[in-house]
Length: 93
Image 1 (tube, one colour):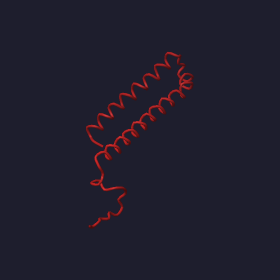
Image 2 (cartoon, rainbow, N blue to C red):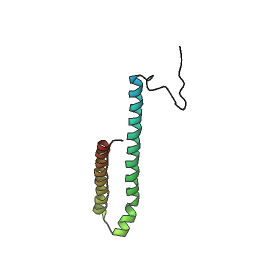
Image 3 (tube, rainbow, N blue to C red):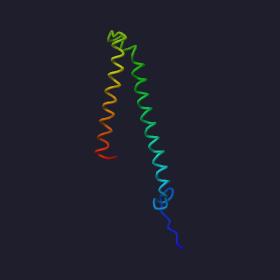
């Protein structure tokens, strides 16, 4: 019986991995990407909310205008996120 040694490879070879191992690894990668994207959204919205007093002072904006600013930012961000996701699907990784 002979064994092969691959230099620089970490973990089992792809042929040694079972289908359930591959699915399990893919699920964790998907979860980590989704958590990272949620973190980016939360940080962006936090930045906008922190900037609201400065925007209100510099633009002389009232409460209604500030609500429009936050909503417009969220809508534009969501639109660009959907567009980026669609382009990523079409162009590949």
